[in-house]
Length: 313
Image 1 (cartoon, rainbow, N blue to C red):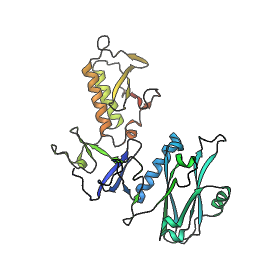
Image 2: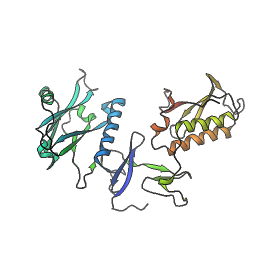
Image 3: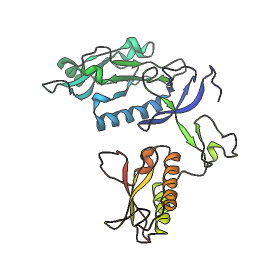
Image 4: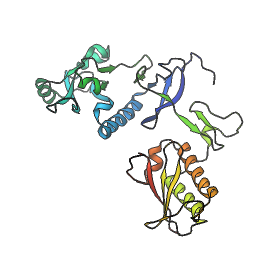
């Protein structure tokens, strides 16, 4: 697609960690090649939930988090404490948090001047317990993005208030995060950016694709392929990192030999199962959704190793 200065509607993601999210952006407005998307408030809430999940799973020291605070236009001023966990660089295991002070009566006029963010103190924590959002006026929202890595190092500017644009959309992570276009895979095997509705040499439209396979469908199809040569097969160990492929095949707890010259399988059969896995990974909107029903197997060499159990015969 030719890049212009016009704003388009599309979807973005950051690898398999964040997204995909609906957004608007100017594809020509880039930071080191990365995109600068703008989101609705509802999408910002989804983004917030995902950033918090990542921080809880991997640690706040390697994650930026997004926080959505709701209030009322006629509410009194409030203080909100956002916890960032234990500072890994502190010898005394310091608990890091920021205090968000909001003057709700001014949020509608200029949110960036109505909100101040600073490292939380004991007095901030007391104020947060005393001051609650009140009122019945118009709803107001404040969005704060916290870069904990820099907050741990004492930065006073590593938490930003995200103001909505004139269109009411929130630019989150632009000129900072590695946003790129989310892809969709056509059943014909071609990949496109989300806003590209059709592959040139295919009649299938993005919104009229056959449904993406579920983990149960993939398990059944891989099992059917492998059982043509090993009817006793009950499960397989698969790696879905980059090029998905079968690692091992089992009959109960017994490993079945997958070597060409000594086991029951041939290269073509194993390759056919690999193709099914790769196509499923390509067409999944999020890898997490595809593998959610499979058993994750801890492994030093791969974070995406799963035990796939085949349906009973």
